[in-house]
Image (cartoon, rainbow, N blue to C red; front, side):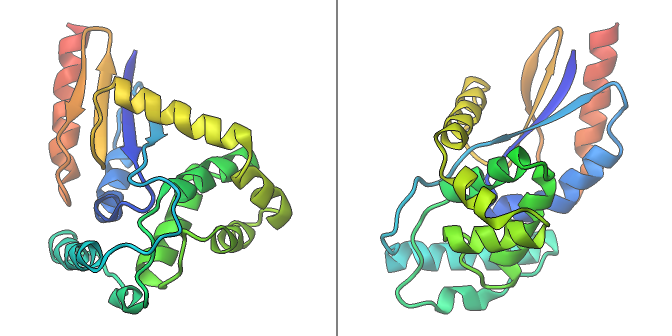
Length: 208
């Protein structure tokens, strides 16, 4: 077994900054390596506006990521008053719900990231997530039902448990597993070759 697992949260801004790098890693991943993804979760369900200090910190983080990762944000998102709640689990469940209905997890992830970071859309609202699902060609009523279902919540919890068992504590995280070992890989924004070189070295050691 040789597996690369990506653990992420759709509303993790550093995951948005890492998106192009991750895609490049996957594009050049050796054919014998299995690729998997797990949803973590930064913040549970809430409708309470975050405090101004948290909002200011996140707004500043977007500027840091924009400078470091060559991605763009619509910073007007933070002009909302009151600030949006600090909640991400519903976006995680949206990815699972979309998969349940036959969509690609990556397509739903990209739709959420684009809407959140570049279109000022409140993707913590189920109605907005349903709009995104419809834009992907899914049935809105079926998606809304799946989004809040017991099965979807259980699937998210199971993925969180798997990630925790791997020792994941933050996002984005890359985890390598083979017949000899498992562990975290470097997350180097903008330089997929660093991670790919480590993977090839680990594969060589595993096949020795």
